[in-house]
Image 1 (cartoon, helix red, strand yellow):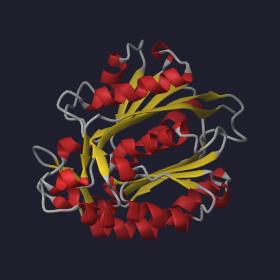
Image 2: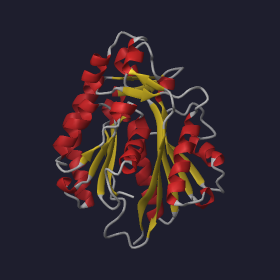
Image 3: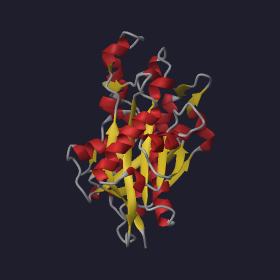
Amino acid sequence: MTGSRVVALGHYQPAKVLTNDDLAAMVDTSDEWITSRVGIKTRHVGGPDEPVDEMAAHAGAKALAAAGLQPAEVDLVLVATSTAIDRSPSMSARVAARLGMGSPAVMDINVVCSGFTHALATADHAIRAGAAESVLVIGADKMADIADWTDRSTCVLLGDGAGAAVVVAEPDGGDRPGIGPVLWGSVPEMGNAVRIEGTPPRFAQEGQSVYRWATTQLPPIARRVCEKAGVAPEDLAAVVLHQANLRIIEPVARKIGAVNAVIARDVVDSGNTSAASIPMALSKLVERGEVHSGEPVLLFGFGGNLSYAGQVIRCP
C-alpha cells in the first residue's frame, strides 16, 4: 500500500521584529503583562511589500531545495491560510507562479489555526488515492494585516510567517507510515469564539472560552491521535502544537503524557502565526537538531472554527 512521508521542511519570517516593549509604546500593555499571560516576547511583522504568497513561496522554495526536488516535479500545491485578501488567484496559484512550477493542481485550505494539519492530511489522502506523488504543503499567514492594533488583548498575540513541507509517495508505507492517520473535527456551536470578520477584516476571540476548551477538551483528543498512529505518548520525540499561547501549549503537552518529548515553544519568539505556526516550529526544531530523522512527532492544530486536526509523522 502506498503511504506518504514528509521529506523536507522550510520556513520564512519577515525581518522586522516587534518586541513587547515596542507594543507598550502603542497600546496600554507591558512586557510583564504579555509574558505572564501568553508567554510571547517577540513577533515578526511583514511590511506592505511582503504579501502572504511571497512569504509562502520563500518557505516553499527552501523546502523544495532541502528535498532536492525541482518545482516542475510538484503535482499539487496546498496553501493553508486565512489571511488571503483576494479571492482569486488563490495563494496556491500565486505560489506556483512565483516558483515557476509546471501545471500542478492548486488549492487553498482555510481552517485558520489548524489549517496546516488539515492540509497535510489532504496531501496524504491525495497520495494514497493516486492523485499525486509529490505535494508542497504550506501554512502561511500575515496576521498583522488583520490585527486590531488598539486592542491589547489580541494584538500582542499575532505574528507573520510561513512554513512548508514537501510530501512524497512512500511505496509499501502502510505498516509504518511516514504520515499517520489524521483525527480531525470541530465544535460548530462554538465557532464564533475565534473570528476574522468585517471590512477590513479584524481578528477577535473569546480568550477564556478558547483557553478552557483547549486545556480541557484537546488533551484526550491528542492522545487518540497517538493511538490511531500506534505510538504511545511517552515514545514521542517531539510535540508540535499550534503556537497559540504558552499557557495553553505547556498544560496540553503535559496532559498528553509526552514525558520524553521536546515541546515546541516557538510562540515565545514568533507569536501566534495561525496556519504557519506548526510547520514553522517543526522546521526550526529540525534545523537546530532537536529532533532526528525517523523519530515520531505529534502535530496538533486547533483554534479558529474551534476546529482541530492532528497526526503523528516521522521526522524527515
